[in-house]
Image 1 (cartoon, rainbow, N blue to C red):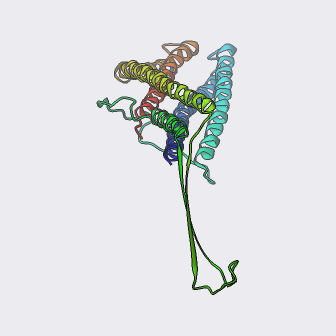
Image 2 (cartoon, rainbow, N blue to C red; image 1 turned 180 degrees about the vertical axis):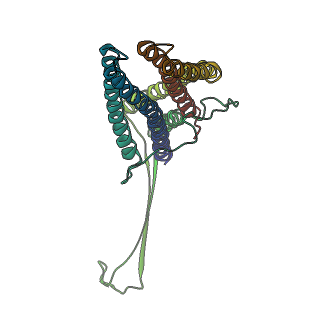
Length: 310
């Protein structure tokens, strides 16, 4: 009974582990789609901007105010951007299909959040002791211990008790007529003593080896999860520092570069090639920020998984 109960608890712990892994995968997919949505917005904004400047470049060429290089460069930039946008939309559709599958949902699920960045509070954590993987390995240790006790118990003498109660209708062997009201009782007792216990002793030794293996597996996975948690905490810290730079310095500078480049280009202070270089620089900063948010989210999701946070 103890063995079966322990095996049931092990199976329940494995179900909990699978649920935790599924939650992690859903969160990763959810925020991956949000990241692609932010990049899509950035590319669409650039598409609108480049389309307008291509129109103006074509007019300037017609009036002789610019050369063919300016118009060709604008067409090339716009074409490359549209290809990037097409590839991104394809990737987003694949991720959306994956999320629909994970959620087992008939309609397409569209992720919505107040911010593409996960809110993370650096609260104290109890570590990885409550991780479902460790819980399942702990139960496997208990199962191995119960199995050892079972094998030991099979080496002990077996006491058997039996009781029988019956009736006879009709004439018995003693030529006496009996009816159903007459009852006959019998009992037996037995003691089974194992004489050849060599094979059972070997099974006990094998069960003890399984106990040691289960204990070693638990310690190995615990050490591995502790290292993963430490590495994840360091990644969160590093990515958070990068995000602080972008939010306080990088993004404001990118906005300033873009606005200044547009104003100077319209004012004739810089040519189209200079404008393209400056605008691409601003877009690169915005894109790097989105990539950093994505890495930060992945680290937070991993931390939540390791610490059994929802």
